[in-house]
Amino acid sequence: MKNLAINIVFCTGAALVILGIFFVIFDTEQILVSTIFQIFGANIIINIGILLLHKIEFRYVVLEYLLDISCIILVLVTFGFIFDWYSVTPIWVLIIMAVIIYMFVIIASIVNIRKKTKEINELLQKRKEKMEKAAS
Image (tube, rainbow, N blue to C red; front, top):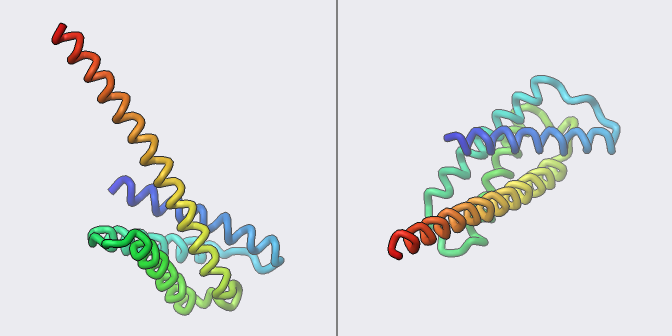
């Protein structure tokens, strides 16, 4: 549950930063407070959807990534229609944002897994050394 909350906040922050960059580059309207909450809601649904998708084991990792991206795009397109995001942000920008944020999440996950793996290996090595000393 803690990881879900962290992912939601991370994705929301990343989406707001990318959206802010888009607004500066294309000199569009300012972002509204209600839009921030809409993005937050979309990220809640996206992360819960991805969590549910990961409960299913897929034979191919590429298929899993494609389903994740499809889930993200589906939610963003739906929220875009519901909250009229397309009057300010084109659909292609939402799709690019989705892919960029997903890549950030994947990279962060890989870094986190490597960090945890290193910590576990260090703990196993310490335990092995203690066992060897105790056996001597």
